[in-house]
Image (cartoon, rainbow, N blue to C red):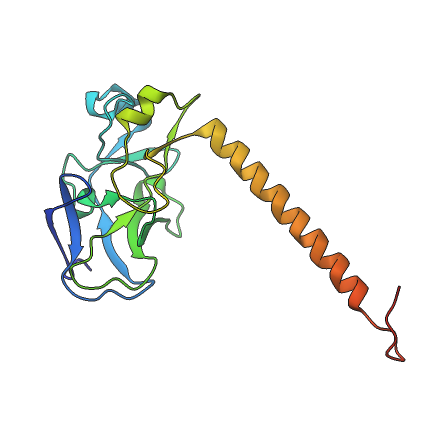
Length: 192
């Protein structure tokens, strides 16, 4: 799965992962691997601290976190971007055993040779996203839509989701009204 990629220095941050050859949209690129640990174990690790600004921890599910510091794959070097070309999907198993879930990095779009791979880390910070936390979790992706931070406030994200749902509901309502106005009766006359 990972023969089309390689790790090397990145303009975004430290090391990165780059395409050696073309990768198609929807293609599975690499599995995010590491040691499975509990959330409590992750909280106890010094490198899992929200104030560190750096992590190789990936939340797998409600039971486990993948610690790529131990036995991690090249996927741990994929950097964050506010305009990502990849997405991380958690794949479950038929027997619903959370210890068997896997994280697969897939291409969101076609990726050309030499292009750096990236995905949105979607780091959720409990409470308010302070200026200090924004600095600690600073984003250097350089995208036109860069937010300046890899971290997001859970509270702010919930507000954003609520606003987006409201906009979608309003859009649907307008569309339905428009469709209703444009309907004609059996004789071809517009209904009022």
